[in-house]
Image (cartoon, rainbow, N blue to C red; front, side, top):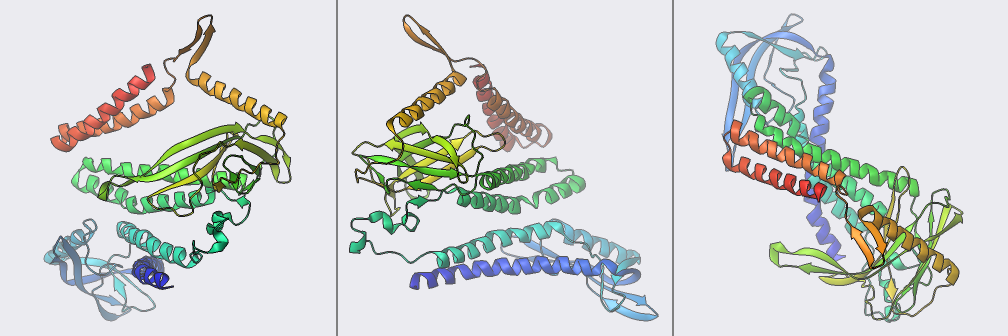
Length: 478
């Protein structure tokens, strides 16, 4: 409980910032909606310009005005310039409108203001929404609010920690993992789907202000270098596409949990089970299952630490498919040798896990699921699949392997043995895509060097683009 309280106290300020910024955005949009029926009247400026406030790292600006106007034979005064109050340095909005007000006051010109006809004392010069500022605040909503509320949800939804020294877990250590209480194990697909959406929203929130800043820089300053920054929203579009694909995969095939037999999976015995997929049975479909014993460990030290994986053992097989209650039922069995590492329930700097992957090329949306399953040296045998059915599954897997090899190489069998020939153009799609990326980087580098005189940064972009292009040409023609 103490840990939960400390984590909650740490998360609340982040969540508070997110809520505050969300309220600020909502208030801005609400006010803009209310002002849509306000009427324009002429006003006389008494003062106008902008103030500069110097900070430790940068300066901020705030436009100001003092004006008088008549409405329905009564005189009113106002000083509100825009919906958002306070100083900022998001773009040149504050300085631009301040300069315009200062120039109008110097020339003695009248300005137009918007007045609330139901409450004429309320007025404003610019009732438009500053979308660049909204995008900037959205970053805080997503980043700070996401971190704060995500941590709160994770902390309070997590089950209490179990005592590894409890004798009840001595013979059944897999029960320490709350996902392994029964023989049915769910895939990580749903978590991956939400993770894809979270990362896509996070990235797009950060890069959402880029088009507005780029537009202003190009139109007002003729600074075409900022076009390079548009790569960030393009990456955001790709991330959204990835999230949508993960969602379509989840909605099409459903949860598709695996039910293990034996439970847990057995080192020195069998890892077998069934998977029910929400897909009409198709005898021509091939569902490939890959079982891997993985060693996860940290490499490096300090800021250079990274999580790495190494496969200790792996086997693949085509699942036996038949009509099932939910569409298609898959049955599988792996023979697992002795001497492999069991699943670790505690994931520290170095641990082992068993990963089962289910994949199939299905028209429309491909199936791709990962399951982390418990496997221990129990020596238990599976009651699923006869020897004949297992032999057919092995034969189907050999056919798939041979087909995969033929896609990459030409295989000739002669009196002297087998001859492998790798044809040119086998990486044509990836090579053309890489050439396009290299051309974009090289073009940006040329523009920076020739047009903008930015030799250092331009040379970096150009060199990266040239290296990508050369490598992709090699891929295509090798």
